Length: 297
Image 1 (cartoon, rainbow, N blue to C red):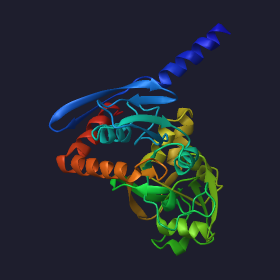
Image 2: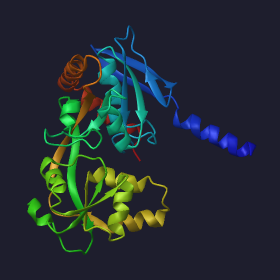
Image 3: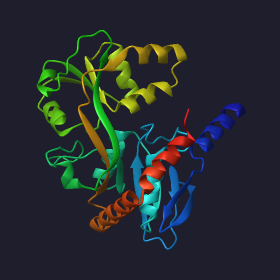
Image 4: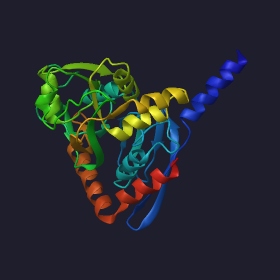
């Protein structure tokens, strides 16, 4: 029993291990240390305007509690808000729960999010569109969205989404994909099977429960490569799938802020100002390269 308690304590401490974030602001190198706080880490800003509660997900290689440095999007989020004088409490949650918490005002910011169309309905507030509940920032770097199929299976996606009609498509529950695809999904123009995460999505395709899956290929590949599957299972899974057709879309990433957050418009303006400064100064690219290289395999 003592061994079990020790191991649980060790795992808990590792999960909440402090992670420093370093960024350049006003030509000065700033470092902020994360301190364990509730079920995440708190990054305090000097003379803080207030503390903002960010909820996110495990979505490697962009961001994950299991990455050696939690990923470049993690560092980017802390740096963007800290540079504007906000302390940041950052918490990892399952994506559907993260979406729910921000839409209901139980957390302030959801990220990284894809663009949300005005017509996207909320799954958590009846008779409301998501954009009625959330404000969306300007964009930052993202990645391609593609369809994957099983190798040697006939291609389905021709470049026209109408080619998907009659197929069974695997999606991750709660993810935005593209406005056109999501509209067809809402209209039930093809059958959908939902997964709880990207690894399960890959397994649905491998098990022939779906014809295609949709997602960011770097995330899908990473979900298998760094999973707890044994090596032979990883190799079999990765070797069994391939991209179907050309990329569907390049999806930029966004911060989504709850409209129940006090002065949400002011916070959104501050985020957009920081995004502009980071992009124009080259700090966004520097953070992506520096943080990604730290965990290069």
